[in-house]
Amino acid sequence: MRLSFGQKLTLAFAAAVAILLATAVVSYRNTRELLRTTDAVTHSQSVLATLDGIAAAMSDAEALLREDRASDLSAPRARLQQIEQAVLAHIDALRQLAEFDTLLTAGASPLDATVRSRMAEWRTIVDDTVGARAGSAAEPAAPPYRSAARESALAQLGQLRDLEGRQLRQRSAAARSGADRAEWILFVGLLLVLALAPLAFLMVRNDFRLRLDSERKLRESEARFRAAADGSLDAFYVLRAVRDGMGVVMDFEFVDLNARAETLLGHRREMVLGQRLCELIPSTRSNGYLDKYRLVLETSHVLEEEFEVEARGYDAAWIHHQVVPLDDGVAITSRDITERKQQEEALRALSLVDELTGLYNRRGFLTLAQQQLKQARRGHRELVLLFIDMDDFKEINDNFGHSEGDAALVRASQILKHTFRDSDIVARVGGDEFVVLATDTGATGSEVIIGRLRDELRERNERDGYPYRLSFSVGASRFDPDAPPSIEELMAAADHMLYAQKKQKRQAPLSAV
Image (cartoon, rainbow, N blue to C red):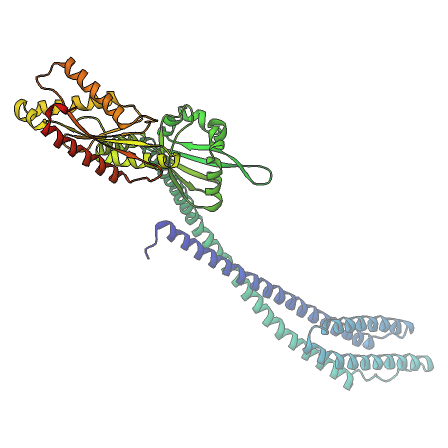
């Protein structure tokens, strides 16, 4: 995996911080060790000072015993008591120091006993000397200044001084080593600080540049999105849920929309943003779309549908609608499909309407006739179906051309449209064949309807003045709701009657319609 420059800087900074933390831990431990060593050095120095005090006091006592105090018998004894008190004070101090030093504890007790024994000897020497001088004018013999207790005390003091001297040297060396380590740690810490300073500067600068670059890319992305959204033919809305105190969605407010949405809504973007949906389009609540949007948000299911717009001021008649759930709202894409619906309607009409005459074709007739038969059956109404065929259409084509033949078909369709009601279904089902389903006959029979067609045909022939006369052969059948036939059966019955009439016309031409 390839690391970016920012990631490398981050790893370097993390490594430096780890080293700094390790240095801090080592420095802390070294400082504690240095403090302990310093305390030990101080302890050793105190022990040596105490031992020196004991030795000095004993030396003072020895010197006192050698002095000539004949002129003042009380002075040696008082001075000796002061020396004994000083020695005992040093012995107590040594015992207190020995509580934290196991080696010193082993030598302190014997030293204490030896020193006390020597002090007893001092008192004996002084008492003997004073007594001798008081009882006789002659000078007493020299007292025994040297004894086993004196030699033992001096030896023990020397041993303890040597022991503490060695410990002091060791502890002083450890203290110097700890000081050297502390100096080295401080030096390393300063080097790390000096190394981290430019590293931190580089990281901050790099992060600042990355932030600026990210913000620039975000602005560019938003600008591209806005341009794409505004250039889209689809209307795009973002709605945020408006909740009541219980957290129930009571409405939605507009958060964003594109230019196409402005066109459909008929309002500028600045006027729409922040407005509530039901206030801008009140029919949203009454037609159930607020509930649909709420359901999309609650179930996280996408809604997609097409519907006809009934709201006033909405610049579209048909809308393709897609609603996508967001975190706390919905995104709506609406496409104006009015033109597509119109085209579909036109295509549907073309598929049901005869292009030449404008009447329904066979498919259109069958579709609409099926519906009328169902309604007539339910309403118990009678219907009349007429099957109409143009007479001599081939002769018109042969004598006057196909264009005039088409014109004759158009004239025939106009006659049929004028003869029958708008509620009747009139269709061209073949080249020169027409069919009519009269849906509102009442008590009128097929003879009356055919008679009305005959009158209209005669009137048009006399008025138009074409070089040929239009003539129809007509077959009729009746729809009985009590025994309802199918549309195919009606057409077959009327067609049968039509060809019977055509046969009759060939035998008696003047009987044509």
